[in-house]
Image (cartoon, rainbow, N blue to C red; front, top):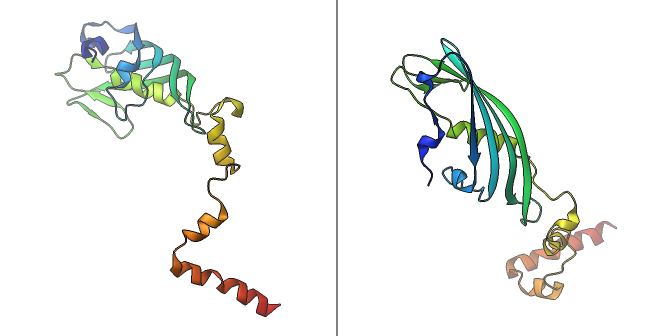
Length: 181
Protein backbone atom coordinates (compact mmCIF):
# COMPACT_ATOMS: atom_id res chain seq x y z
CA UNK A 1 0.00 0.00 0.00
CA UNK A 2 1.45 3.35 -1.01
CA UNK A 3 1.29 6.55 0.99
CA UNK A 4 -1.66 8.63 -0.24
CA UNK A 5 0.30 11.85 0.43
CA UNK A 6 2.47 10.92 -2.55
CA UNK A 7 -0.52 11.74 -4.79
CA UNK A 8 -1.73 14.89 -3.03
CA UNK A 9 -0.92 18.38 -4.28
CA UNK A 10 -1.11 21.23 -1.74
CA UNK A 11 -2.70 23.69 -4.16
CA UNK A 12 -3.39 26.48 -1.63
CA UNK A 13 0.32 27.19 -1.34
CA UNK A 14 0.79 27.44 -5.08
CA UNK A 15 0.74 30.79 -6.82
CA UNK A 16 -1.26 31.53 -9.93
CA UNK A 17 0.12 29.98 -13.10
CA UNK A 18 1.41 26.59 -14.21
CA UNK A 19 2.99 23.99 -11.96
CA UNK A 20 4.37 20.65 -13.17
CA UNK A 21 4.29 17.37 -11.23
CA UNK A 22 5.42 13.86 -12.13
CA UNK A 23 4.19 10.52 -10.82
CA UNK A 24 5.29 6.93 -11.33
CA UNK A 25 2.43 4.41 -11.43
CA UNK A 26 3.00 0.70 -10.95
CA UNK A 27 0.90 -2.34 -10.09
CA UNK A 28 0.70 -1.32 -6.43
CA UNK A 29 -1.00 1.94 -7.41
CA UNK A 30 -3.63 0.16 -9.51
CA UNK A 31 -4.45 -2.41 -6.80
CA UNK A 32 -6.19 0.37 -4.83
CA UNK A 33 -8.97 0.53 -7.45
CA UNK A 34 -11.81 -1.85 -8.25
CA UNK A 35 -11.65 -4.11 -10.10
CA UNK A 36 -7.94 -4.75 -9.54
CA UNK A 37 -6.81 -5.81 -12.98
CA UNK A 38 -3.53 -4.10 -13.80
CA UNK A 39 -0.96 -6.12 -11.90
CA UNK A 40 2.14 -5.13 -13.84
CA UNK A 41 2.26 -1.54 -14.99
CA UNK A 42 5.01 0.91 -15.75
CA UNK A 43 3.29 4.25 -16.33
CA UNK A 44 4.82 7.70 -16.14
CA UNK A 45 2.29 10.47 -15.49
CA UNK A 46 3.33 14.01 -16.34
CA UNK A 47 0.86 16.54 -14.98
CA UNK A 48 0.44 20.28 -15.10
CA UNK A 49 -1.76 22.23 -12.71
CA UNK A 50 -2.72 25.61 -14.14
CA UNK A 51 -4.09 27.70 -11.27
CA UNK A 52 -6.40 30.67 -11.79
CA UNK A 53 -8.31 32.83 -9.28
CA UNK A 54 -11.52 30.79 -9.27
CA UNK A 55 -10.55 27.51 -10.92
CA UNK A 56 -7.74 25.20 -12.01
CA UNK A 57 -7.02 23.08 -15.07
CA UNK A 58 -5.32 19.79 -14.36
CA UNK A 59 -3.71 18.30 -17.47
CA UNK A 60 -2.55 14.68 -17.29
CA UNK A 61 -0.47 12.74 -19.79
CA UNK A 62 0.25 9.09 -19.12
CA UNK A 63 2.77 7.03 -21.11
CA UNK A 64 4.08 3.55 -20.57
CA UNK A 65 3.09 -0.10 -20.68
CA UNK A 66 0.58 -2.30 -18.90
CA UNK A 67 0.40 -6.09 -18.77
CA UNK A 68 -3.12 -7.34 -19.41
CA UNK A 69 -4.91 -10.39 -20.81
CA UNK A 70 -5.62 -10.81 -24.52
CA UNK A 71 -9.34 -10.46 -25.25
CA UNK A 72 -9.14 -13.26 -27.81
CA UNK A 73 -7.17 -15.98 -26.00
CA UNK A 74 -6.73 -14.67 -22.42
CA UNK A 75 -2.94 -15.05 -22.66
CA UNK A 76 -0.81 -12.33 -21.06
CA UNK A 77 0.29 -9.46 -23.28
CA UNK A 78 1.78 -5.98 -22.96
CA UNK A 79 -0.18 -2.93 -24.10
CA UNK A 80 1.23 0.56 -24.69
CA UNK A 81 -0.58 3.51 -23.16
CA UNK A 82 -0.25 7.15 -24.29
CA UNK A 83 -3.15 9.42 -23.40
CA UNK A 84 -3.89 13.03 -22.43
CA UNK A 85 -6.85 14.35 -20.46
CA UNK A 86 -7.81 17.75 -19.04
CA UNK A 87 -9.78 18.04 -15.82
CA UNK A 88 -11.52 21.19 -14.60
CA UNK A 89 -11.49 22.02 -10.90
CA UNK A 90 -13.46 24.94 -9.51
CA UNK A 91 -13.57 26.56 -6.09
CA UNK A 92 -16.97 26.69 -4.39
CA UNK A 93 -18.90 26.58 -1.12
CA UNK A 94 -18.66 22.78 -0.71
CA UNK A 95 -16.73 19.87 -2.16
CA UNK A 96 -18.66 17.87 -4.80
CA UNK A 97 -18.67 16.73 -8.43
CA UNK A 98 -21.06 18.32 -10.89
CA UNK A 99 -23.00 16.56 -13.62
CA UNK A 100 -20.37 17.75 -16.09
CA UNK A 101 -17.61 15.91 -14.18
CA UNK A 102 -16.21 19.16 -12.82
CA UNK A 103 -14.71 18.79 -9.38
CA UNK A 104 -15.67 21.61 -7.00
CA UNK A 105 -13.42 22.09 -3.97
CA UNK A 106 -14.76 23.72 -0.81
CA UNK A 107 -12.92 26.31 1.33
CA UNK A 108 -11.89 23.64 3.89
CA UNK A 109 -9.91 21.70 1.25
CA UNK A 110 -6.22 22.42 0.85
CA UNK A 111 -5.00 19.28 -0.91
CA UNK A 112 -5.89 17.93 -4.34
CA UNK A 113 -5.85 14.12 -4.36
CA UNK A 114 -4.95 13.21 -7.96
CA UNK A 115 -5.13 9.38 -7.72
CA UNK A 116 -8.55 9.17 -9.38
CA UNK A 117 -7.43 11.48 -12.21
CA UNK A 118 -4.32 9.38 -12.86
CA UNK A 119 -6.27 6.11 -12.79
CA UNK A 120 -9.01 7.43 -15.06
CA UNK A 121 -6.56 8.83 -17.60
CA UNK A 122 -4.68 5.52 -17.72
CA UNK A 123 -7.86 3.51 -18.19
CA UNK A 124 -9.06 5.88 -20.94
CA UNK A 125 -5.72 5.37 -22.68
CA UNK A 126 -6.06 1.59 -22.76
CA UNK A 127 -7.15 0.23 -26.15
CA UNK A 128 -10.78 -0.89 -26.28
CA UNK A 129 -9.78 -4.17 -27.89
CA UNK A 130 -6.74 -5.75 -26.29
CA UNK A 131 -5.69 -8.57 -28.57
CA UNK A 132 -2.43 -9.75 -30.04
CA UNK A 133 -1.71 -8.05 -33.37
CA UNK A 134 -0.94 -11.42 -34.96
CA UNK A 135 -3.20 -14.38 -34.17
CA UNK A 136 -0.07 -16.57 -34.19
CA UNK A 137 0.94 -14.91 -30.89
CA UNK A 138 -2.30 -16.11 -29.27
CA UNK A 139 -2.66 -19.35 -27.33
CA UNK A 140 -3.16 -21.77 -30.26
CA UNK A 141 -5.22 -24.25 -28.25
CA UNK A 142 -7.77 -21.51 -27.47
CA UNK A 143 -7.76 -20.33 -31.10
CA UNK A 144 -8.49 -23.89 -32.30
CA UNK A 145 -11.34 -24.16 -29.81
CA UNK A 146 -12.79 -20.78 -30.88
CA UNK A 147 -12.67 -21.66 -34.56
CA UNK A 148 -14.32 -25.03 -33.94
CA UNK A 149 -11.42 -27.10 -35.23
CA UNK A 150 -11.20 -29.02 -31.95
CA UNK A 151 -13.71 -31.85 -31.72
CA UNK A 152 -14.16 -32.33 -27.98
CA UNK A 153 -16.87 -34.99 -28.07
CA UNK A 154 -17.91 -37.46 -30.77
CA UNK A 155 -21.50 -37.30 -32.07
CA UNK A 156 -22.38 -40.66 -30.43
CA UNK A 157 -21.56 -39.32 -26.99
CA UNK A 158 -23.66 -36.23 -27.57
CA UNK A 159 -26.63 -38.40 -28.61
CA UNK A 160 -26.37 -40.51 -25.45
CA UNK A 161 -26.27 -37.47 -23.21
CA UNK A 162 -29.40 -35.91 -24.75
CA UNK A 163 -32.41 -35.65 -22.44
CA UNK A 164 -34.97 -38.34 -23.48
CA UNK A 165 -37.79 -35.79 -23.52
CA UNK A 166 -35.99 -33.82 -26.25
CA UNK A 167 -34.88 -36.94 -28.11
CA UNK A 168 -38.53 -37.76 -28.88
CA UNK A 169 -39.05 -34.30 -30.33
CA UNK A 170 -35.92 -34.42 -32.43
CA UNK A 171 -37.48 -36.59 -35.15
CA UNK A 172 -40.63 -34.52 -35.54
CA UNK A 173 -39.10 -31.96 -37.90
CA UNK A 174 -37.78 -34.57 -40.35
CA UNK A 175 -41.18 -36.32 -40.69
CA UNK A 176 -42.87 -33.04 -41.57
CA UNK A 177 -40.27 -32.31 -44.26
CA UNK A 178 -40.84 -35.67 -45.96
CA UNK A 179 -44.64 -35.17 -46.16
CA UNK A 180 -44.33 -31.82 -47.95
CA UNK A 181 -42.11 -33.19 -50.73
